[in-house]
Amino acid sequence: MKKNYLIIFLVFVICLDALGQTDPVLLDKEIDSVLNTKATSYKDINDILNGMRKDTLDLLYIIKRFDEKDYPVGGSYALNMLGTKYRNISEYSKAIDWHKKALEEAEKADNIEFRVFSLNMLGVDYRRMDANRTALDYNHEALALAETVKDPSLGLRRSIAVSHNSMGNIYLLLKQYDLAINQFEQSLTIEKSINNELGLAINNQNIGYAKQAQGQLEDALKYYQESLDLNEKINNPLGKIICNNSIANIYIEQGNPKKAVKLIEENLPKAINLGDKYYIAFQYINLGWAQSKLSDYKHAESNLLKGLDLSKKYNIPSAISEAYYHLSELAEKTGEYKNSLQYYKMAEEFDEKISNERTVQYVNDLIIKYDSERKNSQITELASQNEIAELKLTRNRNIWIISVATLILTASVLYLLYKQRLNRNEKRILMLEQDLLRTQMNP
Image (tube, rainbow, N blue to C red):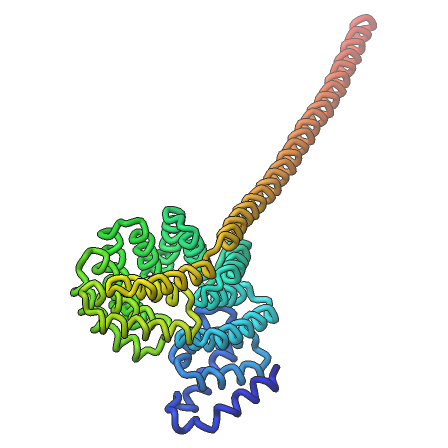
């Protein structure tokens, strides 16, 4: 493993001077600080390295240093950050590779917090690819593992919140929106308790999506706005892009496509600048959809096709499906009925890939399995508690019996001693009386 990291690092190191990484002296100083403490929690490591995790080469160097010092916990942290960087530019295969390496390091360190963190990251990677069954497996494993810890650390509590959020997304897939909202609210409760505003923003966004799917557009808009306010407060560019796109989507559904176009056109350059192809694709698709509502068919088709091309290139089935649906609607409006039918069939085909009956059944089975495991765990814990209570009761009963027996024995001994003393006294009195009588009889 050390050899692999060294090779990767050497491939990149030749361009160090050109890319403006962190000052090498400062970077080494921060790495040494982590190595000196041998921190085992996400928070303790992140407090030191947070400013160093934005550059790919910095992360590769950190991974190399930690590997040389046989520090797998730190390695897992840096590998997870590297995987997330690749996911944020829609390089999902690379993201998965790095997150799997992070999981290996966490397992090597036998660190539950980073195992759960890595499993959740893999779940997000696969969900972004619409590989829902695999995503569900990872998220379920993360949540089940996290719940084995009775007194979770701050980082683990954050991961439990992420796991609940992922379970909420599972219910969204099943179109069980009330159940999804329940999971998101559980996640919100944890995020509030640890004061994680990013987590609050994400869950508010998710609840807004569920409300929108239920047709509660005004409520959805309130949650999207709450999420946007939080993202602006913490200056999260990606979060702001996601919220504005969702708000634009609401405007379209409310019959105000002109307002939606204005918002998306302001938002699109920012999304392009960030480079996350997943959200860029949806920006183009929503823009094309809004333009088609305004009868701007030429620009609508152009933007829908741009979104479709990006979705195909980066393998985003949900975006492909949505683009085809809107292209079908557009073709129908322009009288191209043959193309409309063809686009519709292709949309249905990709929908089938995303959520066919087998997938939905699998998700149902997984949820049942998860609930069953939780109940079994609770029953086992309850049985253990009952056994402990029974042992305590038996112990207390034995103590009571021994105490009573000791008391009776002590009382008996004291009574016998008292009787013996009483008998001796009576005998002595009798002897004295006899002596006195003899004296009187023989003056």
